[in-house]
Length: 479
Ligand SMILES: Nc1ncnc2c1ncn2[C@@H]1O[C@H](COP(=O)(O)OP(=O)(O)OP(=O)(O)O)[C@@H](O)[C@H]1O
Ligand SMILES: [Mg+2]
Image 1 (spheres, rainbow, N blue to C red):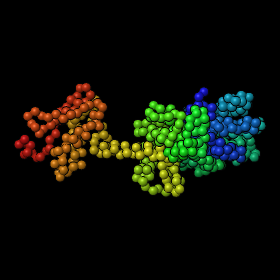
Image 2: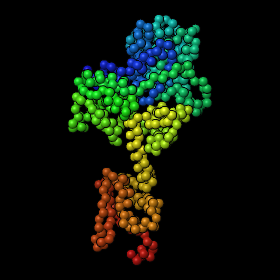
Image 3: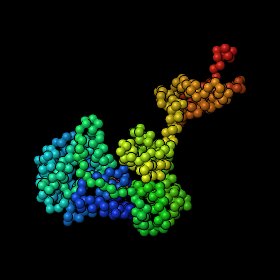
Image 4: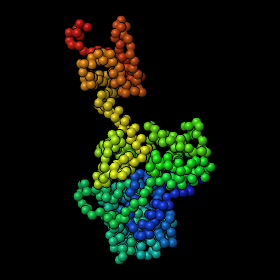
């Protein structure tokens, strides 16, 4: 099968052009060999599953029995109670063993056949581990997908107790958890409503300090393998540097920049040469990735996190568009949250937006938010009373327009109002009828100075609006 750049989920070396991550792999392998328990907490699409998958395949079958589990899509049922979780976990475990070691899976199923709670599960794990001559390494992906944090933490607590007693009681050699949030923040969520758990159930975990982003030398390895395969020429160092410049080595963004060029640029750029990548191609790919109307789950997630968290929104706004200096302090929960989601990073001792792609997306997003919030002030967007049964409610709209005029213009502006009032009204109306209706000015026969505005909406509604300035009762009667 021809290889491709991959931007959807885990990468596989036989299907995808990949950055060589053996340096990162070796560091993680060392922790496993030392029998450490640890957590890989990194933002979305940062290569967590890919490295777990590679660790799984890298563990020598002569020495290790690796078991790869994931809480992705397991459903809420599993997390209902200890009584449902313990046996379900055992089933999940043996099902996973079944793939490569059906004999051992059978053994595990027997050892855990009567498991009803975490205590039973704990004993069964000891019995099973003792019977196996290899070191069991458990890799658990998507740990933050569990819908019952309390139960999940009890489970981790059980693993911790076994780890502490490992000299007397057989247990897993190493446990690796992967997810966006760390176990400490799961604990925080529980504390809010119950004030329990002062000890982290995972305080045995070793630090996982591996830099999961790709440096230029690493990015180059992917370019070299692609170029060799497709017979493409390029200045590898310069291209890798430029990709790093835009992405700061974010794994998904690095692959995405390359994928755009490989698969989409030919259609977009007339003089693109697929056999010779240049810096212009990387620049194009950056612009293409950050075009305002393009979106992908990675950007959607970022925006969702900003929309759902006012403090984070304010902080990101401050460091991005307002250019404020904010100190990097991991103890500040909102700073920490921004880093957890990968939107913000610490650069020296200051907080910055993590990469130029995000910077660009955030600028576009903030600007648009600003525009719509200005509209909100001056129009009726936030009231949503302007439509009734699919028809424009003109009275309502005119009332709101009056309010807007009073708020924004004083009597001193009268000359302007006379001159431009109609235009202001039309600008005011435009976003409301956009796509569904039209409007135009129509001179009134017999009165050179007067112009009415005709508004249509849908196929049935047509209104004529006559705009006049109220100059007092007498003037009105005279008129
Ligand atoms: N070694 C690699 N070489 C090139 N690209 C990679 C590599 N590892 C990860 N990526 C890029 O990152 C993307 C996400 O990888 P992966 O699914 O492993 O991350 P994840 O952290 O598990 O994501 P999620 O948080 O969504 O589960 C891949 O689709 C790919 O674009
Ligand atoms: Mg993953």
